[in-house]
Length: 515
Ligand code: AHR
View 1 (cartoon, rainbow, N blue to C red):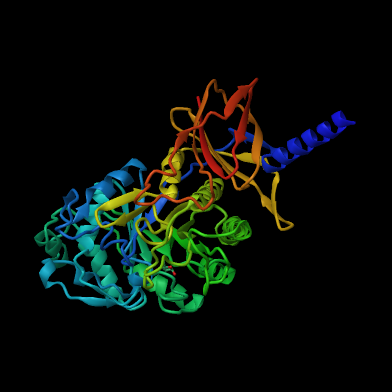
View 2 (cartoon, rainbow, N blue to C red):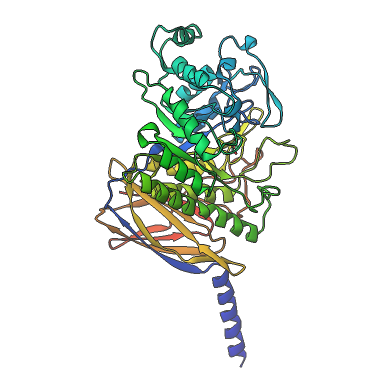
């Protein structure tokens, strides 16, 4: 009798332990059957004149005791070079459509000041302009992606900006660039023709924007060595009509890409977006539901594009994405938010979606690099820290320009309050040396998941990996504890015959390397 009672207690304890840390199973197959490349531009970044992104982020006061070139912080540059950012979008965002580039060239003390009406009414002294941005890109070894002002600028202004930056002629405007210290043309190829022209960029209808695009694009000229990749201002989230009208009216030879903007707002309510650091499991679940919506958006916009452009000449460029929470207290409308392990899972999930749609998604930009929205880096005067999101870009850099490997995945559900979503998401690629990289995200906060993987026509012998996780989903890096969340070697993957078996811990992101 006593024995029976002890046994039932033991069974109960074992059952509770399993419920807290049950091992569920996913099946994954990865094939070699593809000719697609994961464009490195999927890993692009965005930096707007907003809050402490540029001023107090990249571009600091002369007196700040950090290593600098001109006023560019070199500790930040070094950290970004490590993760190989391929492109940087600038100067906005909404700011782009009120930016007049001539205000940002020539002697700094003579540059006019303006009010940044979009972002906190701060004074913009134009000390960071075209030359400073292009110097920054050269230090970062990345390509500039410049957004031209369509909303409040003119065709002449945009056309002359491109000439100023790219022309090697003896025209007065090209000579002006030389007088301002850069005789060689910069050869900037990525140009956005306006930003959010359906909203802060001019509140246009898609039909009106198409005509504007064609006008502006006609006078955006190619100069030697700089054939332009013009990117049309694309839809807001699920505005499928915008995509339809653009694709119908703008011929594919005129545009390299069309943008898509979609942010993950934790509560789904722009009035009360939710805290970056304090949230319940139920709010976390809702956030991940909204994050996974990117899959639906990319799929549906791509389907519309396929109708008009079956050869997939035009790229879908998700050049604003990331989590947008309430700002930290005292921020005064300039979008400074902390970055938790949740943000890392969001980054990994979005990048997996983009990798898996690399036939159409050939560019993206996380918003917004430093101190703004889902940042890679946060600073407090001369202190800086790398966010969990930074570490995801570090892990995932192996996918840049690698051969895409198609996957098939059966994921267990992550269930909260009777609602479910796929717990696991994955993408894979093979680099030019033959190494296979697999990135896996487990969104489930409680359950480790065992993933049985078969690899078709892929030979490999060893597996290594890195993992990003932490004790709590709300964990963050702070200036007192900057390395609380950091990459570690991952030991949970092994070869089993020709298969790969991975035990993916709850709330983690892993990238494996098979060779
Ligand atoms: O990234 C912040 C803002 O979000 C950008 O300025 C704008 O394009 C978008 O609405």
